Image (cartoon, rainbow, N blue to C red):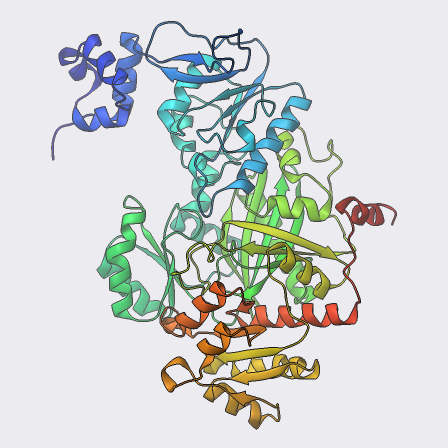
Length: 607
């Protein structure tokens, strides 16, 4: 192992001119540390000692025709600094950087609302983000904006000039959250939940010890840094297992693994997604329902913003699953247990600000999946459903205003049903299989609200560009495990005068349960087959649920054709049941009522 050079070692062989030249050529402290066999903190210390620091220039929005007053800044290694520090109390907010699947507009929403709330309370707000295609980088969102990469070096350089009273890392997603430890080491005050509490929730061993102490169930799990370790853990837990790298967002490189060979293949590839972190391995909970809980906490109180139930079963990423608020299939006992666990975890983690918890219920057993002491992608949805801007409430809590001072002291009861539906980009990528799984694929979301679940779901589908049919032919092809659950869905469709066609096994099963159904060939069985029927516009709705490890191989051409020809489809039985409820509600109501969010909230406030 090569010796790491200290600041004094570097000082004896690196001149100020060399260091300044390297920085002007765009080398980061981390890159220089690698080249000079040191660490980035030694490079930073040397820079400060030698007076090598960036200055900040103002973006000239008037192209030199008039003097520009817009407070946009960018760094450069020159001489004159144009970023003038004021004497006001100031909070720095870190945005999410480039939008990507799993981390996008929902987090930008939270950053904006934090800035709005703190500006209203008299703080100078400083936004740091490198993405000009976001609302957080609009000219009127914050008092100051720095177009800078979201790295510890760049954020600390801004802080050297601005000297903020606090830095908010909770609202931009995983990117700023990963900086918390380094920013704290650099002397910054992290507003809200401490970096140690964030690490406690992310670190599998520390978190496992905490929930054991609290008496909360968790699926059997382990962490592995090698293929041999992963195999040993999976064989101890039992297949199938859910595997994923730690410290990533959007379920990146997450998979359900059904055997040893698939696990070996996964470990070869997925470690690249997070090479410095262990791989997490959990027992996969089959036939379970997932729930999301968003809550806000201050040092003395915890208030639940909303409890959402996923429509798709466990195994589909929370960002891709449709969800319902309030939950529609849960016992009062389980609901009380979710609330108790949420309060206990918020207090044990000393959360100040937002927190998201994901639970799974299998039978009557409640399991915790993960805790995120930060904003989640469901915050905008919950805020609009309950009429409370949770990100604003959380931002104020993070700078010292209690929930009682903000008059947010209890869970908000609502008299309507809100459904969130994911917008999936498959029409832009026609070669991609449409099966949903543990890795997030959606690029947006929409919301439907009504007093009836079916109508709420129907509205959400319309928002996502899906028109559920009221008549026609439904194609059914499900795996063996789903055949029993398909029977009541098929019966409802038949009762609504839909014609049913199905592949051999599904058709025979339905006929054995006295449901009228016609058989249609699979692609490999001859012509005319289901692919021909889709291309000819003969199908109104498709229900196709592939099974487990075959999910990437079974019937992909059919699903791709559904996307290509604009055919409404679902790949989960729970999604099919919700679609049928939406169709039934639409047939029972002559027209969908259009009402504003404010109308729904007025009804609540009068009661």
